[in-house]
Image (cartoon, rainbow over all chains, first blue to last red; front, side, top):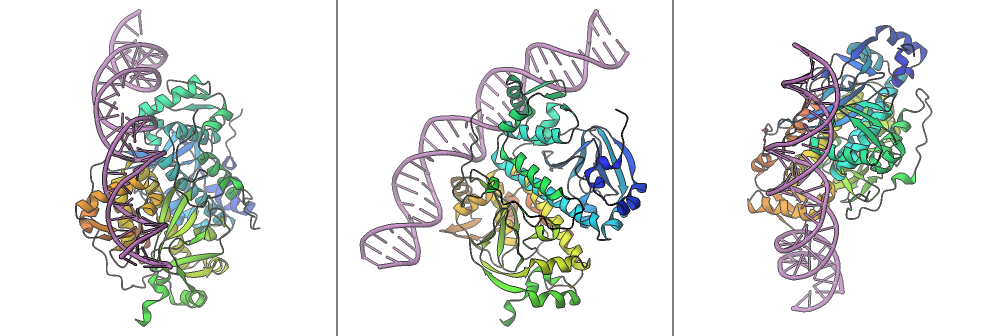
Length: 265
Length: 265
DNA sequence: ACCCGTGTGTCCGCTACCGTACAGAGGGAG
DNA sequence: CTCCCTCTGTACGGTAGCGGACACACGGGT
């Protein structure tokens, strides 16, 4: 594998039209994303946006007492720094590198200029932002109703989707911070998965052996977000309105009392 | 009495410039929002956007098994239907009237047209959407880390902010659905508040007696969202609406349940 | 080779919340 | 006034996950 470093490895950049590429690509700067690097802190005024290629960035919410929770994961399907073109300039979250790799960086002003040309890139970025909204909403619901076991599966799947391999470099401690649970909770959940032969891990290295079974043990949250993200970001710069598929997958039952236990293993 | 009903009661509409008002207001339609009315279901293609005046709308996420959770609350500071201008046309959530009143409705196409004029209204709507992002993110974190007691306080405060009075018409059962917890959990939490003389309630009617103490019992989530929303929507076009600034939200940190540590780089 | 720090496995008491069940309290409709 | 339905209060066992403590195991650095 030659180092095939190309902005179009990022799907958003790859979806741009030739004229847009001409305007944007010359100003992109490839930067290494080292594990644990903080792209911005809560409240920082953003200076750049980052388009990950083979890296994964987590948006982490850290509270006053130090408790934290991941609200979103961004890989090569998205970008970091939506607050720039949304107009807020800052967000109350931290962007931290969850899996090392590279990203292309663009000075905020350039992105804003392109955004306000109101071309295809604006539409694209808005749709991505909606995908982000969906992901956050689903995270909120998942946090409310699902077990650590299920959430670990979701988290592994989301990471897998953004990586070229089945190996994650990630300690249980870090996963716990992302999920906002105790490390011991992750140890236990991961132990179960390992006993079942679904994953194998040792000292900060997790290998997924059986993805289909991982999906089966997961809550619906993973699939819902993936489907909605795919829908939103398909047809990169095709202006025709997409026909939203009324799928039975998301049929809403008529507001009954809630029932929220998960199925037995 | 005559001007009881005015589009500018909605802050977004009130922040529009005169030319924008001329284009938009003639097409607004005032519609009653009755308690429990569903503006759209998960997956519905949106036909209108709604600008609440004295009503409150909840964005509710309903899962396959019927479990639910509120991901956002919208009152006269915002609008329902961001997916229209964000390009997705649908969202996987339900919009349901949580407190009766009125809203101004606009056909989606008109909003999109105005949005794509790339004027002040676009900036306004984008900033509002970022506020929505913040609210969802905070909800996710709150769901993870805070007790039902704290979340009830947050929920009451968010509702109060969007109402002209201190009375909410809302059964514990409905609140439970919003928070995604059991009704009994709400009964217990509300009972504590009542015993402390902070609220009084009976049969679907809740009166807040002591707001400052409510804020003190609340987690930080309320204040964070309020502050960020104020920052984002602070008179974007300076129409100087006759809104006397509320008491500056005192940040209240009350008995966190846990403290997860996080890594340092 | 040896340490020793980092990562993982395990235990135990504790609390918040769940699932279920049922009893009383209003209040509107007849 | 009475019935009945909705709303609220309470109780009880069960459990997921917390907080804290500790033991071990790998493996890189000196």
